Image (spheres, rainbow, N blue to C red):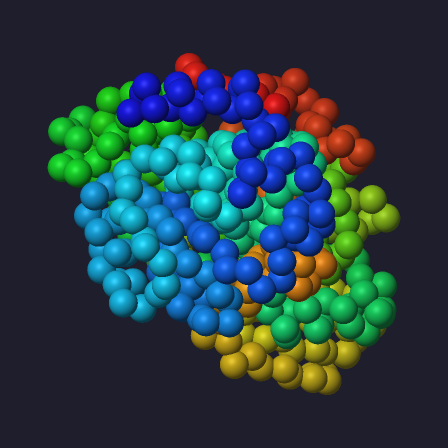
Length: 448
């Protein structure tokens, strides 16, 4: 496995310009590349990561209108890739080879696009290495493990010209698109504030302890770009989210990404001027969850605009009448929007319009999926082919929304508020900037 990775990285170093699909240079812009492959050509796609999120892609992969072959099903855990293979057997087109090592996929020039549904520490590195290998990528949230990775993703995309869609799928919800457009056109006057929220009832988490590596798991490859360490019980299967900053980005990176993105979209803001955070672990004090499980964060933007985040991972009280969503305030009214649609109120609080979605997109259920994801995936495919000219969530937009999550996490970790450079997003605090990047396992460092 290590030799395969070294060979792969060496090939990228010496021949990246020539790596591409059907011999096309990866230096082509996405627009030029789309014209070459043709609007109706069948796409070869690969699944990278077969955990809870992967089933959200099933309907889009089975949809004949998307015209795709599944070339690979890749996961470092044998039982997971085999389960997905069984789930999709006879229901999709394509050979769907089951492999454990993603380098096998990157080395196959016939693969056009990859769905990156790995753990957080793999998201950005797996995406930029896929771009170097000539692949388009649908990258799940969070798109990055730290702020520097967001910058790198945008830089890699500009260099290689690949289509990179971030998986904050509410950007593809018709009702959300409709009401955000109306907000931008002044339906609630001058917009000044958005409150984004999430409530879930996550339970106790086992305390970490050293254990044998589970049968069928390639633990070294699971760790990939993160500095390698001994295996601890149940880490690989979701609880990595809560076992510190080595792998995950806490609940803010896990779920605030969605609602903070909607808030920023509505307010038409980029980087905040100031970030203030209060967060703590408030439930099951002696369990293995080592991060906060409750957070209030405030982001102050130019022109006196403000976004607030109310995140409760282990308290199911629906403070705002829903388990997740965004409330947008304007001088002449208010909008509540979530995955179920939106409600528009005038300044007195009178309901003006109630647009309920027929969406079946999951809210707080693990893995999620539904018609918003289906539409988001279709948009990704259509932009690759040139049938559509605009991604609903291009990486340069997604990376800015993700930065808000990183700011919140960093504020919690350094236990103080800080100012931000609104031009480049950098934190104007030396302690905060110490957390801008991360250490990588030797040989996995990004090379742009």
